[in-house]
Length: 184
Image (cartoon, rainbow, N blue to C red; front, side):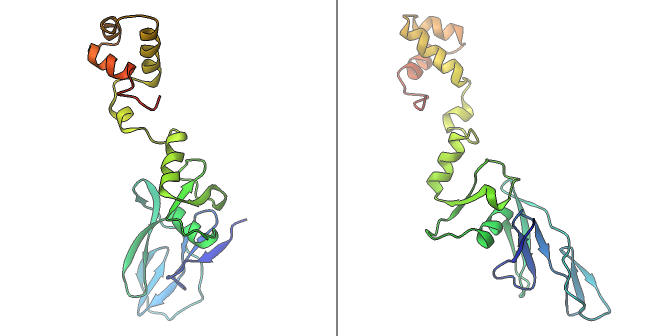
């Protein structure tokens, strides 16, 4: 069941749900009606507060929304952070929110946790969501690196291995001696 809470600092303007939906509350500011995250001109007074549709956007590949404060200032914030701020206690004052399953689109409160930056990075590497910088630009896969090391241990010359993998003997030496691909 979807539960909603007011977004701190935007009371009477926006609410966030435990599933990651963000709602703009219908309101009239002067002669402007705010509904569905957009502004409309109005000739009528303030009506009842009603929940409006959700707003979409991205911030560094994470679903995000742009919130407009009472002074007209806008702030773009990720949905998962809004859910965590509203629904998850943070007794250690951690700065980052981790998606437990690694899915940036799954902003359900049960999939989120507060954590340190180092934990968040480690989780991303362990889950295969991020690569080491050497892996991101490498022409070899982990499987190929392991194969090179096995061949060298079995006495195959670096030059022969280099010909098999279309690289230089120096590259093979660096991989075999853990100067490159240290993490495997």
